[in-house]
Amino acid sequence: MATNYASADRVSRDELEDFLGERHRATLVTRRSSGGLQMSPVSCGLDSEGRIVISTYPQRAKAANLRRDERASLVVHSEDWDGPYVQLDGRAEVLDMPEALDPLVEYFRSISGEHPDWQEYREAMHRQGKSLVRVTIEHWGPIATGGFPPENED
Image (cartoon, rainbow, N blue to C red; front, side, top):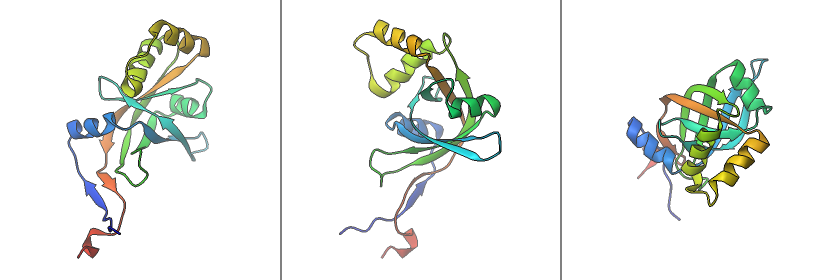
């Protein structure tokens, strides 16, 4: 059985965006009014300006927390649990209808590509009253993997 060793690779902004563009699962961390942390598993994409985008509803805790305190952190995971991941920190904004409609189209495209009926998608997003969270990335850690400490490598 192969031994896996931990890695932590510092990357440029372009390399980060390449990494994020292929990954759509994350854990979003926001701050409750009490000061405690609130964590949400989310699907996310990357918009044309390099911001993390997340679809939500205006009444969700993540949206309420971010309206009050724009600080956001995420761990973006790989599909494979043992795959590489990265932690990001930034400032978030919450867009509601109708302002959220076009950014929600870009969100869908960033994750799933083209929709078979964009008019139907737009109507559904509007009818559901969806919102969009956009996180402007300010800091990021290394792209990392878990495993044994590298100094234990033979």
